Structure formats: structure tokens, C-alpha cells
Image 1 (tube, one colour):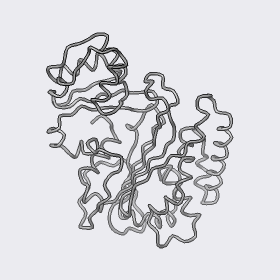
Image 2 (cartoon, one colour; image 1 turned 60 degrees about the horizontal axis):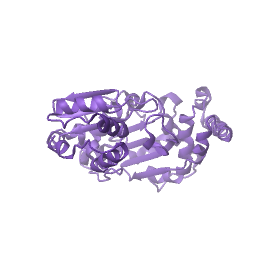
Image 3 (cartoon, helix red, strand yellow; image 1 turned 45 degrees about the horizontal axis):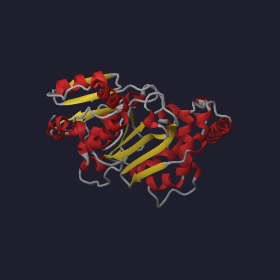
Image 4 (tube, one colour; image 1 turned 135 degrees about the vertical axis):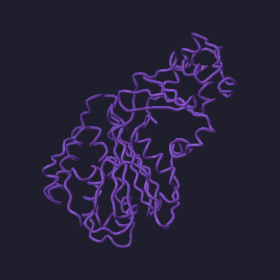
Length: 338
């Protein structure tokens, strides 16, 4: 609260005040323009408590809901039409006292750590909605989390999958040998299976190295989800060759649709190619640009901003070294209301 009191300013005009707060916060965040404009017009006094700050934000920022938790941190839920966007104000000491909840939010850059430990696994304390039991179990546990920002439901409807009895080092062989129905696997993972089965020899390379080989296909895959291209699940479940043909057909439909986009301002959508990867044999992090705001109806400072889908794959060896971070990651993307 002392920091907010020290930086509080209301005596500048709209754009200058916006630039001032953007510099102080270190970044633009959703609704900052509304906040600065209202503060410039109404000129409220600085907040003396976190409860007063909550009222200042509720009255002046573009939000759907604001929650004060334990009198220690604020959750500002914007509930945007396209995707769930939230920002958080947390007292540092409180955040550090509960790293299982906050460590992902406190991480300062995109790349998560790659260190792991092969000691006996420490069970992860999380309730998974989907658990898959491979027929040929080995050792360990593997976790898969996908976040598609293409609907109003947003991250709240993303459910992680747990594979019991395999690790990330076993995944290539598992996806090639096991028989799946489309409903058994999350769509991106099903697509990885198709791509892996096209390759003759799986030896000598990690799953991360394999994905990097077909990374150019990933933006097209994620645009299928954003463009709502229909996939015939019956054909996807009819064997490898039929499933491959169905994906090829969907990509062809995507190509045709991009020739005549519904909205002129999205003509550049077909040029989306941005893929970021970080990983090793026990952890994979993928960000795939699936969309962008050419123009935003509420927040003009978000124009031309890229929107990314997120994919995380990690096993119990990675959890051993990043226990709090793993829980925080799962909690945040499963339910953005912490």
C-alpha cells in the first residue's frame, strides 16, 4: 500500500497520466487506459488501505469483478469477450508465504526453469479431471496442460490430463503404439500423435526434439481451433490414415477460408507463424500464436497484440525440483480465480 500511495498521481491529462502509470507499473495491462482517464477526470485521493484501493479500482478501472482475499491481495477479473484476462495486486510477503498458489504469477519471464531431479517422485497434490492409464505402464507420471484463448470461457475451462505410469521420455513411443479415440486425447496431443506416426524412426530423439521438427505445423493447427474448422471425430477415430486425411481436409478448408476472411481487418491472420518453445527431456513449454487483436473494442493499446495458446508437458522428475511452480501453474490455468 505504501508503494501505491507514493506513486499515486491525478494531476496530469489523460494520455500523459496513462504513460505515467504505464511506466510505474512496468507494462500496459488490460484496462489501464480507462483507469488513467477516470483518475484524470475524477481526481480521487490516494488509497489509505487495501479496501480503499479496491474501491478506487472498482470505480475507475475497466473490470467485471474485483475480489479482496484475506485482506492481502486483490484479483481483478476483466472477463473480456474473447478471453479471460486478469491482473493481481499481491503483498510480497503474503505471496512468498504461499508459493504453491503464487509462484507462477511471480515468475518474471516467459521461460520456465528446466532443471529436474531423478530422485523418487514427490506426488503432486492436485485433483485431475482426466487421468489416462497406459496399458504398458513403466514408472512416473506425466502431466499435460493446454490453454486455448479462443472463447469467452477462457482458462477456467482448461482441464489438465495426467498419464499414470509414463514420463515425457516415454511419450513418443506411447503415442505411436497405443490405440486412441479422438475423445481420449486433447486435440493438440492427438495431432502430435498423427505427426509422430508419419515418421519411420523414433529412436535417438526426445519428444521435445520431435515437436521442434514439425513446429511449422503448429500455427495451422491452432488456427483450426480459433477458426472453428470442423473435424469429423468419427473419421479421426477410424485409424491413422483416415485421421490424417481428416486433418489434411481441415487444413485445406482453413486455407480456403483465409483467402476471403470474414473481417477485412483480419486479412493478416493468415500470416500468423509465431511459435515459441522451451524444453528438455522432462519439461516442454510451447506458445503458439493462434490469433491477434488487430483492433480492440475497449482497449486501444492492445491493437496488433498477439494472442497465444499455451501448451505445457512435464513429468514427475521436473515436479521434484519445481514442486510449488507445478502446482501454481496447474491452479492458475485451471481456475484463474485464485
